[in-house]
Length: 406
Image (cartoon, rainbow, N blue to C red; front, side, top):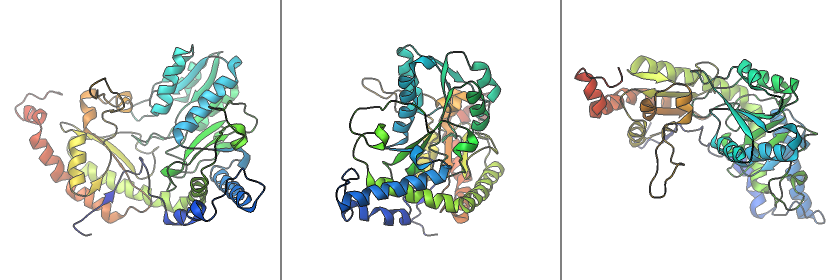
């Protein structure tokens, strides 16, 4: 490996577009540029056919019917369409919503606004591994529970939730069940019929497709309202001229994910275990986050006592490794003049003390990550951590016998 290293270990944030996906997209920018709604001429018909093919490919990835796939611009839009769309179309179902306390902000911030509109929200707690107990969900159900929305997998700690069991509870009570699968679909097998869900959020850029292309699986027969008014695209549920190149790319990425899933997950599971074991053996004061087994393949997250995650991230970046600071502090929360820093809601939910959240790191490998890259990270981590410990006033206090965290 050359000295000019560029190792990308932040695949939970986004993935590079696969060149095979890009090759399928390129003609639809300028060569086949038609509007799918222009059914009267050849270019419009061609574009519409491309959407049909992409819709079929995405449906095959999650084992749904093509007509149950609604294309959107991003996972945030899909989440909002599922939750708001269902509640607004079904006001008689009740005004109680169940989520988990570790949802994405596109769910958390949405339900906060819905609370101001008279909805009641129950946020289910998770255990130290980030898992939800389906029995706790069952006990939270009320006569006026209209909707349950719980993420399939968490990007920060990698934990995969028991959605099938939770959906069974929802189905028995005739409650609408949505899961945010943005970080899961395309990376682990997802079958909407096996899970028994009513709606599923998907995001192309999380599995080697383009940004700006996403989808919502919506079980046939479900009544929802669109988020905004316009034409009749996407069965009247998502108006606006379709992003044909992006949707074609999502379809291509879906077909590749479906074909290559066993090989990808096998490699990533092996590399993830290698990284976990190596860090566990070599790094003192390390604490892993998320469930050790029920987690995304190739996803390793942890915090290190006495050192800051941002400093660790910067030191690794200098050495050519790009990872994520596990949302240790949220820059979404801004005051009028400055940023307000807050401990990650995911880490505090699993019991990590707020003062330790700043030491959090998320390393997420991708389909093209190599054993050599993982070994390089393992080789440099002890030196980096030791250097940061020597710079840490908290660690200095510990050495003087005044451990602030004892």
